[in-house]
Length: 371
Image (cartoon, rainbow, N blue to C red):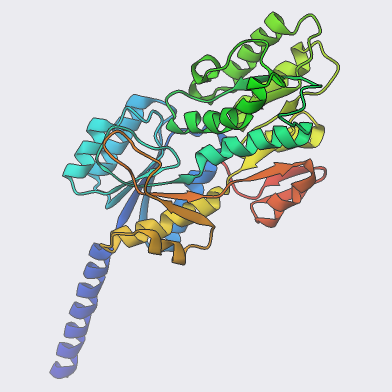
């Protein structure tokens, strides 16, 4: 009997030690998202948390209400937990230098998620979409839809730009891709900009605000289109700004035509506008795929590896490994860039095929919770 009791005690002790070891080996991932006020960040946060938890990691997910000070504090709290890996979608790419220096001092690697974080050598990798290509797709859509030919100046069109948040490094890439694509037609006089707003700074929209985009477009329409001047294209860098621009066109535009309106993200309200003809297209970025790439990258980092191009072989989503495009002020940040694509009214089923959307009558709804 004593031998049996001793054996049971030894077994219990061994199991206890295994449980302790397992608990110690469980690594925790800190995820810092900018805000819940934009639909896409709710989706990003949810997909990231779900995928890391399903892979056996602990997850600490925070949203910072588009408040820079709060995001610094939130990340500081994650460092204090401590987490083993930080995934950060920055509110302001310039504002996290000291906080991320603390992460580096603590030995916590950092993945810049979707938005490049500037002026810090604490960033290990950047995961996003090909942001310049997003703008190229928008610009090319305008060219194809209007049938533009740079050698044919027999017909001209009017276009206005609405760009994104100056604090978001991606916003300049979006605008640059679109403007560069359309510049030959602007230079040829085929595309005219009656407002004269041709620079990113002139058309930027702080915080990607729908209300600000609405107000800016209302002012543009009142100043340059109230006499019946036709607006042919409203090129908006994303869906939240497109929502405001479409609202301004509905309420304040004197013309009888429906301008082309571009967007980006595949937000539900904008997909409804596409069905209703108030928005023409959106550039879709599958955030579930972005989270999946981030998961594979994070797993490799947490395993002590130094991922590079070979990581692409383990990815289920199409992506490229880039070591030349994204300099954050301290050097080139190795980047994994996914491929975006265009969605129009005729291709909405493509979104349903991802499993992330479903038809509800004439409109699409998200199959994922966003709260």
